[in-house]
Length: 308
Image (cartoon, rainbow, N blue to C red; front, side, top):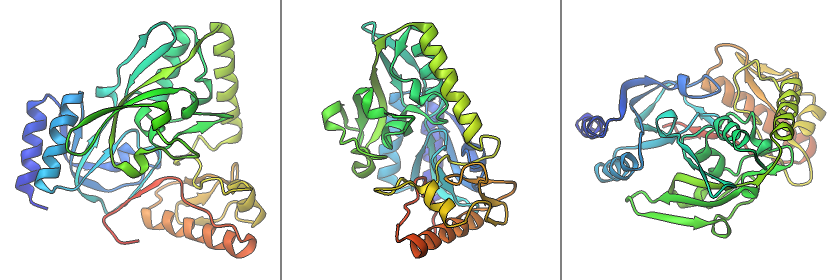
């Protein structure tokens, strides 16, 4: 990769008021706390920064990635080449609309959006309270929990293609299904979304949020870094049940472990590397396939320059 081209992106980002970091450690930007360095990290701060910087990277043929909170990513410990555009706290406005909707920028955290909904007495998003991701990532993968999914509340999405052309998609155009949206295939970048909710009682909304958070604390290994559920739910069964059935709870490779609290989570018990994590994931997949016939699919996206 041409460092001169990366410096062009850095200069343009600085002119747009974006914070930049060279040779940035990506472990600080993933919930697994695993990941080497990237050449340049840019904290996006506006739609304009996306509209100018992404097409610039395309024209210069500089490899790049869009990160949110990194809650559904596994990043190579040896680092990755190119630029990471971070859609986070500098691009996280949440605004009420028409009394029963919220317009949210892609970098807004689900916790922030849920708390804003509570503040305005809006119900329907309680299921997302505690999911450690951003609006952009949640829409991208149709995140869900406890019987709710983003498809239940997203009424429209503003996105751009890699050349900077903007389009607004209605709910019916988003191709939502289990852990999938149109953006998984289109390559378009989510800029914002409108969340349609209903008026509710603040006390009831807060009680539901607290109830679901307590369920997470009780049943999930939140005390360790992870990317949440490591495997998608296979048709007709549950990944955690299959993993437990195969006697894999507590199996460990280096610092990576199949959680003894919830076997659907692979966790970083301390100092786990990308290689250890990937080895353990493969052990789980191979064992489950051999013993049950089910093929497990990894839910987090794997970010590496290597061929897997």
